[in-house]
Length: 209
Ligand code: ADP
Ligand code: MG
Ligand code: MG
Picture 1: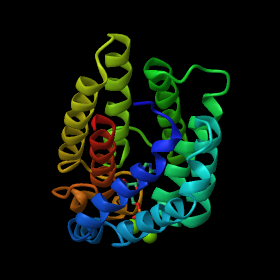
Picture 2: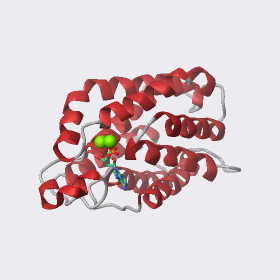
Picture 3: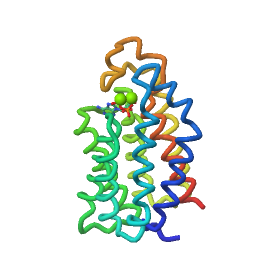
Picture 4: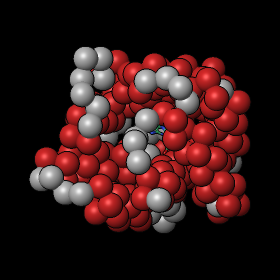
């Protein structure tokens, strides 16, 4: 199997399916410590991407990531929209003249997660999607450097993502809407961390098949 944007339509459908399947659960999470619109925001972005899927599929990764980022930026309001748009635009920016094999991608992804940190002025431990994205990026870099095979890497990333979600439960939110609640933000999983984990698991499933 070649890992090119020709997989994009299938990947987007897998993301739409997993977010739809967990819509109620995630909405409850964002209602508990946010404003309840996180699923709606993601669905808007994913639907816009599905509408552009046939344009994106024939592109190379750099052009595809740029187009994905711009599409998400235009379609989605909310914190998550601009943060995911930043991730994809940074993937495009950092991949110019790079070989996008597993090890090349792991470096580019790491840099893109750094860009998300900067955009949101946030880091791990603040009860956000970064509690999934940062450890996943680090694990990907380490496993790719160690020469681990793709299937094993994907399993590892799924496990790291699940740990990251669970870790947000007892964290105090210091960024985003949940931070307005102070101590009352504790005891709830972060919605954006949960959806990041769901999407990583769905991508892994497509790439393994
Ligand atoms: P909004 O909070 O604007 O309604 P969403 O509900 O779509 O937007 O997204 C909320 C999620 O965005 C949170 O659950 C959290 O994971 C993530 N988030 C919010 N602020 C930040 C930030 N500064 N850095 C990283 N992630 C953030
Ligand atoms: Mg929200
Ligand atoms: Mg909102």
